[in-house]
Image: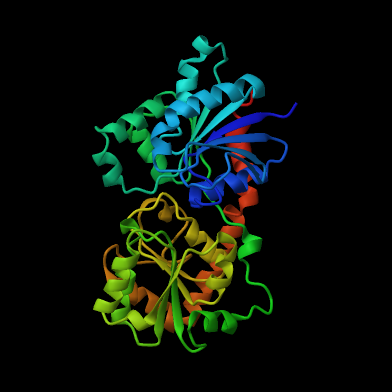
Length: 386
């Protein structure tokens, strides 16, 4: 009989797609012999309460509003009990410390009351908040949530050594498995005969423009404003493509106008993940000057696409980026240094090509989703095999 795993994720496809959601889908799709169910909050009106996405049966709970996440511990526990009575799960897999990830622990506490067996819990840490932010919350409700979750977790998986350190800082002494996020290398490899000029025309760039691209949520930690300001230190033919949406979009557009570079910045907005490669292939340098990162899928995706990367040495980025080997580091919060590192790529073709090749080889060897999914199977699912 095939094993059954119940996943707890606060958000999921199709309306919510970030590193955590991509990781779940890529890993579950590549383990077809395991049956996966998921409990997630509906959050957005119009979504169905049940849908099969890839290899996962997705159960969406709530009314389709932000209140759903607050109600999730209660309604999620009720739904999990009903499912467990008929599905008899072998493992619970909680994605990040959220309103949803508390449910498997509540289930195990109530197991004798509801007449169900204890189920091992895997907790995956994907958080991208800065160390200072996480630790400032240590004595509040967030800190209490971390401590309670880690106390009752059988195995923690982390996407970076940085997050392993955070788990240990919260007093977790159990087993930890490093299972990074990855990239679908085949999907991001530039196809032969790619029409670069056509994509550039679509975006309003000329073939002679040198185009910098960033892809992220437009929030403070991703420091897109520093990249906009960095344009002021570079020639007029250096343009910027911003992929993504978020709360800072309007203020970033105002910043571009304030710095006199609005005509050099294209805000593309949200782009479906499957369409991201064609935009990366049309650009010259990928930059994300993050103030914090749990891992950073976008960096390894750019590397797989053959686009050289500029990043900051924060969080999980240092696991895969070696300065002048697989990318270039810039100083966080320093637009002038961001510009300086971009200029190196634009003027030193030999170094650029060497970095691109080193990064491509590294991604193939360590971050292809086929390898990552196998890692998760061996280091987590099979370790806790009943």
